[in-house]
Image (cartoon, rainbow, N blue to C red; front, side, top):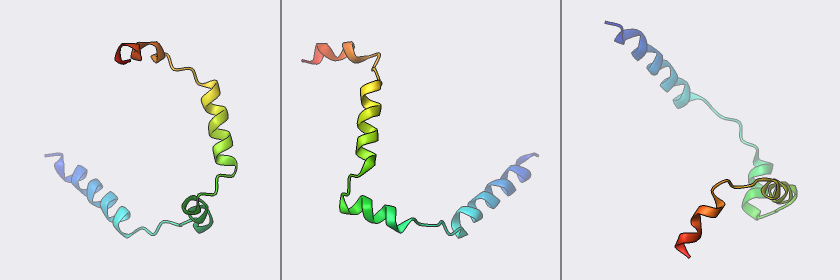
Length: 63
């Protein structure tokens, strides 16, 4: 009996996704496609140094 409201919501969301026009950052896309590794790579490297994997010691059995 309550299926009508849920289906209407799904239909509304599907229409919004189908007909929406997302804004594209062409400058960021160009940087990504050209391989320009400005400050993104630097910030990723800093994050990886601070991150400590709690499961790091469990993969020794594969070696």
